[in-house]
Image (cartoon, rainbow over all chains, first blue to last red; front, side, top):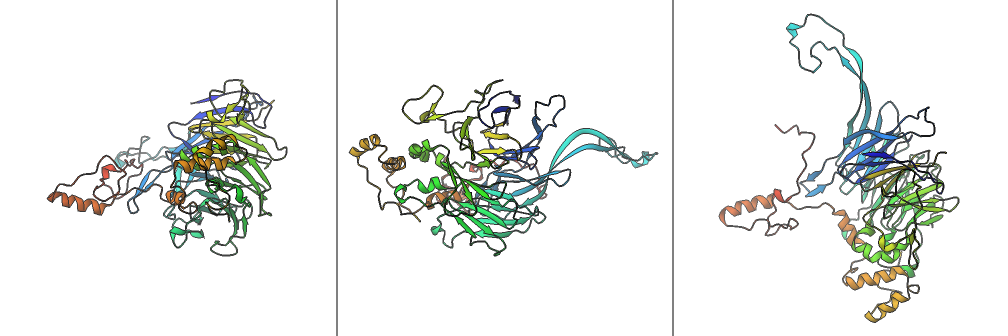
Length: 444
Length: 118
């Protein structure tokens, strides 16, 4: 079920609600545009992948940019039970990453907790007809009844989009995979779990190289885990990984086969007088992303988004408060486990705006140049035709103005963990539980 | 890195002082006030160092216990004497309660049939 909504607004860079898709049954667990922005992939808790494709722009309606329609749906992962370790393996898709397009087919990597798969999505619009040994239904013909030979020809057929698993990269992770990242050499990619990072070649499924291993000899000494990892967008030897202690390590694969020793270590000094039971938990980095330029990295922890310059390790260059009003709610957020929610963050195509999600189906955008920020809401109730996507405001106590919402009224079950930004245009995809919202900026 | 919990500037909250704390929120950072609330509710929290409790829980996500050896041994024993079968509590680990395959979550049937099957 999808509906097309038209809206106008002038406040923020992205203000117009364009599409709302409701995916059947399952919670969306990852969203990713491909390198051209033509395709948008979502993965869900049920192991399914749904790919949307942008319509070609029509010359008749130049003011209306291409709509996204469902292009392909397939079951990527199934639930499994590892009897040897008594471990239940969820089919939930943790991450999807696209490969750049090199021929007519599209390729993407999708992963659950244990297994990465390479999927090929291709179109079929012709089929052979006129076989000699079988009829059009596929039933075999009796060879003795065949008196005439014919040459099968390719005839047009209704477009069929097929997804086939081309590679399955299994059995390389003892712990749960949190990240995958395609290398800029387009020949290798990495997969990261809580304690280890492996490097794969796309062609080879029975071998992978371990490039980071932070498992202590004695598990009692475990103090931190890997939370996210990503390759540098241009330098195929460089990658970063973040930890549950709020640190980021940059590694260079040229220095050693095992990159346990970092080339750079990014950590913000902490004010010891501010330390509390919650300090380490809220400093845990849930996502790390390189800027498109490759000069900066952005990290998301529970309350903030930070931008770091690769040339400066001792502190971030920018810090943005996502929802600082939650600081006085940490006790209950710990009790209901929300404090462990893993929010992602994204850059826009020009690295000038960053976006991340929050609770109550709110998401936030920060303009790095103007230092302006906006809070928007992804909600069906507030999206009617020609509605203005209004900025939202949370009031932190004292008088609540008419349009504001108080911290205590926020719905913590409505969390926006996954968002994506089109690589070149102001089109964003926001996943709110089982609904996918696509927004774009106003076209005059 | 940072000072361990329980040392340094953290002040103990007594019942009487809690009222004051809520009024003087600016004097004590909100994080500390929240910490006090948590410690009041769960006095045993934070005895182990660092975040290792959370980390171990995170690493063990998805762990279910079914030991086919235990199960078969128990089945053999049951022939001789009556043993209590697994109760409704599916999370109970081994010991006297023998988990059965039925207690495990239902496995959805795969789309791809194994080459070993029929």
